[in-house]
Amino acid sequence: MLAILHPNTALDSDAYRQTMDYLEHLPGVSIKVHEIQGASQRLTEIYLLGDTKSLDKDDIEALPAVERAIRISDDYRVLGRHKDDKRQSGFHYNGVEFSQNNLNIFAGLCAVDVPEHVEMMLQALEEHGEVCTRMGAYKPRTNPYSFQGHGKGCLPWVFEKAGKHGIKVIAMEITHESHIEEIDTCLEKLGRPTGVMLQVGTRNTQNFELLKAIGRQRNYPVLLKRGFGITLNESLNAAEYLASEGNANVIFCLRGMKTEAGLPHRNMVDFAHVPAVKRLTRMPVCVDPSHSVGSREQAPDGILDVMHATAQGVIAGANMVLVDFHPKPEKALVDGPQALLMNELPAYLEDIRLCHDIWKKRQAIYQRLRETTAE
Ligand code: PEP
Ligand code: MN
Image (cartoon, rainbow, N blue to C red; front, side):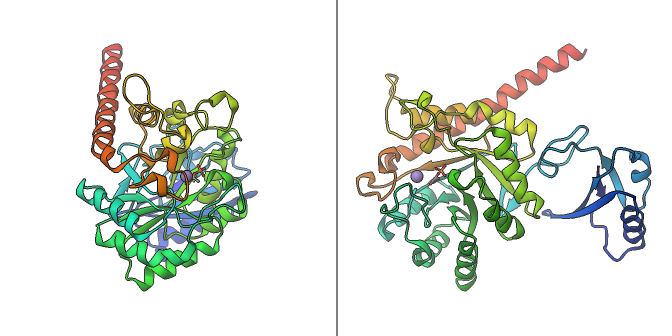
């Protein structure tokens, strides 16, 4: 059972004290308090765990600080959608909205290499009014002798350049909890010119200690990649680990599944799961067409497979696109062959916007259908 308190309930108010006193003394029930700081109000959610079957929803709703109570299922308690659950999806971070209804594009370098390339990328994004990007500083590599990313050494100049070009959010994978502090210390030192979304890579989806460490901090939202060889349920539970530790500002990213059945693509594109994840949880859903498709192969219609896959995800309602670009792919240190080129950026952005608009129109078609069948 979940008890949602009236917005901005003061923790020292009589209503709060009476409510907590009642809940804390329910036999066989433990409670977990979850605070959500929204743009305009603070929400307190109290999760009642354990022997809650016999609890009466009306009794809980009668408590002075409680606005409403929801019976929640065991799966994805914080991030999931439950019956009669009208809680909002998404969050704001550094002036950018992330929800299940809008779309943000994170085009950028798979791995940070030299300042010149980062500058060219960010300059192009600024010219097209984009305020988000991806920049890998810590790279998890299959081969221990491959380039592992510049690590914390590149953070100062990457963050400074991002600030200079008006970038508000950089998706940046971390592979160890110590990277959170490295990023935080660097941003703080520079006066926070930009923001960071911590990315958990597909190889770390079930690194539970890393998930817990990221979940314990509330400064940075998280982009969790789906595990490439596990079930969707297992990956959604990984997201719930973050939320259960306190950080529910999580975006779930589909990036293809590792199976020979996906050939000739690097991974089996799984973007048909966009609506499934939106139905099962309240997380905004991201698609990563670059790591799904993994090449610059082109269909006879003149459109790259990466672009087709992007369109499939966005037309199905994806809320974020994470995509590799590079000004000189032949010089890229990681994943050059799948990178899109700078001169492809305007057309690609136009294509994505078109698909997002079509998704909205598709919703309207089925809305009308529901209205006419209800009449
Ligand atoms: C990446 O986005 O750079 C990356 C390594 O992705 P994944 O974890 O999905 O392989
Ligand atoms: Mn990559």
